[in-house]
Amino acid sequence: MNNPEPSCTDIYEPGLISVKDALSQILSDVPVIQGYERLNIEKARGRTLYEPVIAAFNVPPHTNSAVDGYALRSSDLPAQGECTLVIGGHAFAGRPYTGEIRPGQCLRIMTGASVPEGLDIVVMQEHVMLKDNSILIDARHKAGQNIRKAGEDIQQGHIVLQPGKYLTPPDIGLIASLGIAEINVARKLKVAIASTGNEIFSLGATPSAGGIYDSNRYSLLAALDKPDIDVINLGILEDEPASLLKSFNEISDYADVIISTGGVSVGEADYTKAALQESGQIEFWKVAIKPGRPLAFGTIGNAAFFGLPGNPVAVMVTFYQFVLPALEKMSGINNKPSAPVFLAKAAHDLRKKPGRTEVLRGIIEQDDSLFWSVKTTGQQGSGILSSMSLANAFIILDHESSNIKAGEWVKVQPFSGLF
Image (cartoon, rainbow, N blue to C red; front, top):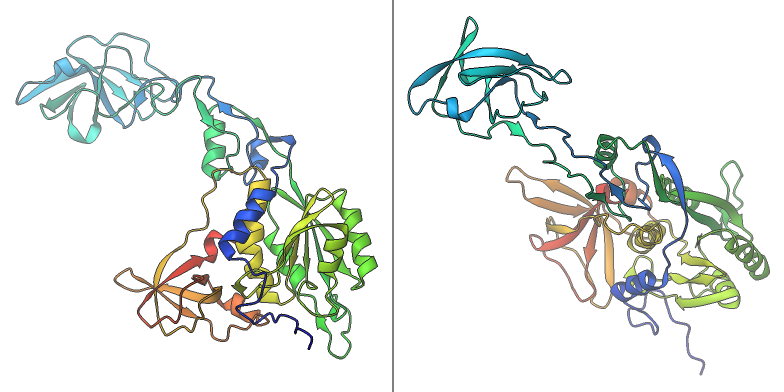
């Protein structure tokens, strides 16, 4: 009697590896790309810093006032009660006062203006009484208040940003504050994507009986629309072993990563896995995850290869759980926070079998007490793409967990940290 082919719905299918082990192997195997390009900082958001940013001067460059008010010597403050100080001059941001402020005098000063040497306190204008050319001040103030010291933010020679920093809007402003107009960033990652399957039709075509429009490639195009990625759209590849092998080999000479969808399960007409086995090295092709079990990972030529499932939801789940972390490592990002995962209360019962990680599409909500709750979007089939569109988070049920009762805590991963 012949042994049956393993089923994609069989939890105990031979050769399955856990989500944790799959991700660990992927991140261990994929390399960090080499090379950089020089960019104006206006174009650098979302790129990865290639070289350190070093401060050529102090920030702020001079000791300055944090408020609109009056700069004076703390030794002129009264021990108790009040005293009168004569206004000896005015200082504005970009127009420092160059005269002398003698004991018993104060300097009218605006926010950001340089504080002259010898003056060690700025009193807010709301805390004094102005009369003619003098102020009346009380004893409640202390030396050092409302003064920003030179180098308080950044000191000259300090490494402000390390290589591998994923550049955010605050980083761009920080670099600009150092007078730096151009920086070196890691070159863009070249990612080739393709759909496979004779049942798949391009937009604008008329599907034959049993045919469907290609949604997977468009989901991936949108997911890969990032400043640090160049996408090579291979379209729909002919679902025939020799043709797939030729296409993958040709693009592997140029691309850093190849992502295909479809053709990696156990069906007789699933040729992608066969092409990968013939032209490259396959590390694994079955992961204990639902949806997304038939996931092939390996190399073709110099390119990392991800053979994602054909079902639309499985494509998106496996992309965000496996491919995106790999792309971030390959880009050299070493400090971008992972998409947050936190606990929320299940709004209803959830069915779950131990022995695999299950990723559901959920809607997280916050009640008046600021607690988070989560419910599913309804039917969770791997072909129901509307479940992704309706959702705002993944519900992640761990490998060994079983059925979840309403009110129990579950892990959620908001889309806002992924998309």
